[in-house]
Length: 270
Image (cartoon, rainbow, N blue to C red):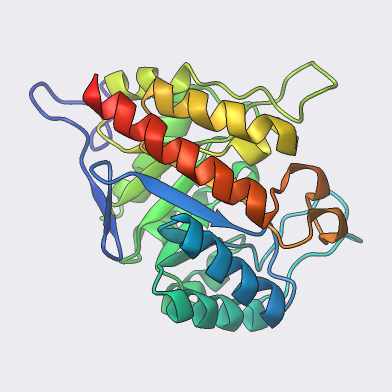
């Protein structure tokens, strides 16, 4: 694609790593974990300790939540950002969180090590432009019905403003089956590695909407060549304030993290 001025794959050039803290995503495997929503100091601190002990190298958590219903829990905002920063610092991990509004970009950038742009905002062009003006890595999720071309051109909006530190996150597209939340498009991973120089990670939590499917799809994503995974983990998933059905508990994540480590080692040996 001629329009992929910055994100397009060039002959002889591989994936360009994106540094977040001491991780170089695209060279190092990103294992990001944490709750869908930051709900309390105790919740995020306990989760940070559990995922770090299991081998995660990045803490995720939502403080500004895009919810289908305006009456659902929509996050703790600035208070949640402070909690995330303290929790991440307590275990020595970088953290990232989603931004919904261009007016919040600078505030989030003061706290977070990376900015997440979610599926519903993949083509929120003012938000993309503002993210491109920050000196922070951006994890850009695929839109609910977005083609790969539309997704890559959204990345171009960010990079055209001068921020080259973009990571693509496949999180599933709107499907027709009632049993999964979305259709997780793992073919997108090797296809994007052909089309683009950007690292590609996968979110099997949103991609399936079912905790029982997170492990098999995580391992499948590793086999497909992803550069990392974004997994939702909560101390008590049945009582979470959002995404109850797709979050893993601590023991489930610990078991999965070991399998991911072994799968990634095996893939690298091939």
